[in-house]
Image (cartoon, rainbow, N blue to C red; front, side):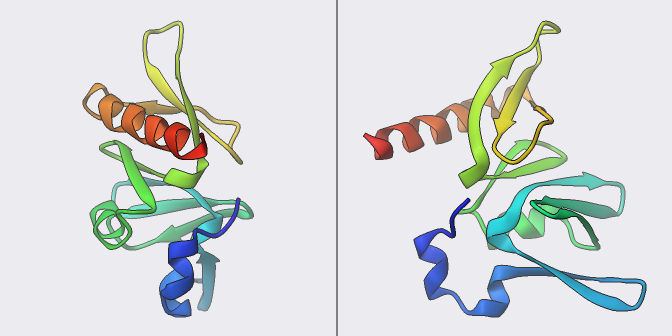
Length: 127
């Protein structure tokens, strides 16, 4: 994955997600994030080097980084740069295919159109 050119103009501190773990601050560069998943009070930030648990809402991430993150389910945001495709599984569920992630994430019916739009925009820009 490569850093989005639009990110270069943002201050460095805005490019990290920070959280405290066992009394020590940990951070993840935003361009290393693959997806974020909410589970009760916390959000798991899945990135190239592991998982970071943060006490911040998905909605806050979605508002702050709308150009970088895309909602695919009520509990999941994905990095737009990691979205590679959409696959319909045997159970009928639509699942997102992401680079850097072997897991295919469920896309709710309500968000399928946005995912298809994102994939079309990426395809159009690469032509």
